[in-house]
Length: 151
Image (spheres, rainbow, N blue to C red):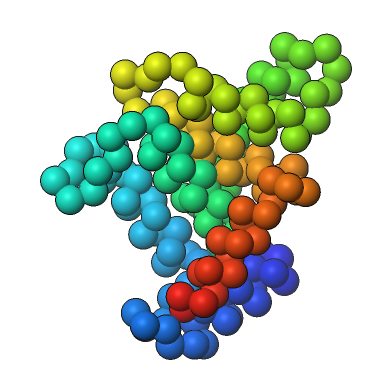
């Protein structure tokens, strides 16, 4: 666990927001549950297109990486597949920035009949965004700031 993750967890747990104390691990659990219920078919949670599936996958994996632990290991394992594929297919190393673009295009470009695929690709994209840094990490920084304010 990095110092940034520890500081975020301490900040979230120490303050009582409108919904009571929250941690990044708890927010990851909630985001993962929404993703799972929405994809499985819920009368309350509607994830009915590839953009929603990709977005919830990115949100879940971003929170999981920030929280650390077992879920971070799991989503980083999912992200290894497109990174390895991108490195193997391309001439040389395309870089994480281009890999992030490639993965995002794979999630939202094709017509998907099964929304599990864009969700899994979105999980990969969220991890790759945080690894790439730069412009891609802005979403993670904003997400963590919002999570800290909620908590």
